Length: 145
Image 1: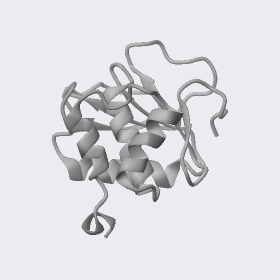
Image 2: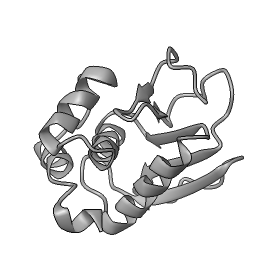
Image 3: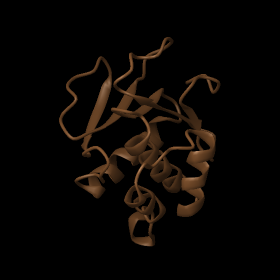
Image 4: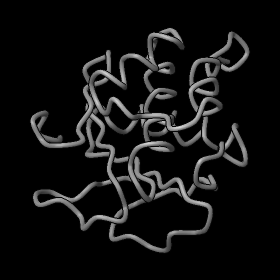
């Protein structure tokens, strides 16, 4: 598991830990992730751990919302027992949006999930109005099936 005091580590409402980070920075000291979800417009390449790429251009929304949903469900399942990270180039917009969607999947209502991530991960999380709107509306009754 991640150390909760490590920069970028977010404790989800359920208590599970996930790390958000910027890919443009070198990998932080300490243990490596065991699984990662990488939010990039282009394939970020291989990592030394299990990973999934979600096509997501900078400042926009994921190209396929269902692909993101599947990846985040895997994050929720795996972060209970593994070190999991979510990252994009800058570690704020796409990463913050995905973390808010993750908090929503973890049971936090949409608007509260946005506030939760801004309070506990980065006050600048979700850089555009459409990213914030996407996170607020990510979990609907249909999406929980």
